[in-house]
Image (cartoon, rainbow, N blue to C red; front, side, top):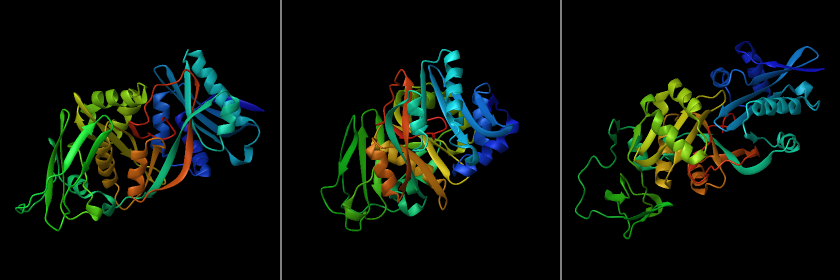
Length: 358
């Protein structure tokens, strides 16, 4: 007999045991955050008196997020997962939430389809070890020279007479740049004006294939940036996620980075510890240059450690960043919706916060 009850902090060991069975990346801090965000919307399933499964929900405005549908291996294929998800849907409907979303694993997708969810798009979980060798030269320098006003990058030595200039054009799709002459060992710097924001990029040494790299003026963020981060995040995700972002910033604001300013958006990135790997994301960027610079800075905080990043497969620039950094696809998730669609923009989503909250 299956019975459902509310989840409490006393059930965190159960959640940790089940996520370990499944090979997932959550920590106890994550479980506490789920409970803090929606204390009345997290549930445990019991079978024959044993606690055997979990699920969590979180309400973001008109959107309810369902996650952490975990069933003990010994109790699978008994309808427990479906029962839990239906209970989560009933909870959201009782609060008149018109949209339910989730990120489905390959194992869970058929369950959700039977409950009326439809696929929206795919996310790729990219995995690898963060190394300084993978970081673009200007961003590697930037990662070590942050100030309150931004990041300084360039050369410590005077430029030789034949200073190079790279052409740069900025449009809605981002930045395009190349060099008309080859680099031959001299240090080259180019300034680039893009719209209202000012970008500086350069190389301390010749780049393979004469490739010029752009990086936006970036800075380390903090809890005082919550309003800016929430606004930019909503433009990309179509969802008011302040209660998630406020907790992530409060837990470790030192791992937040921003590009641009509130009136000239560049983007933001957060990252956090996981039980198996550090998780990069959420991240939003309004140009490829911003996205690459921000993810480089986030990765630099975890040098030598395994990292995960969940990237929408439609965002080819973000996928390319991950591949350029030596990351490979571990598995994929399917973002699914039941009810009203959400107007998110995968071109701006450079990293999901994870399947827990999208």
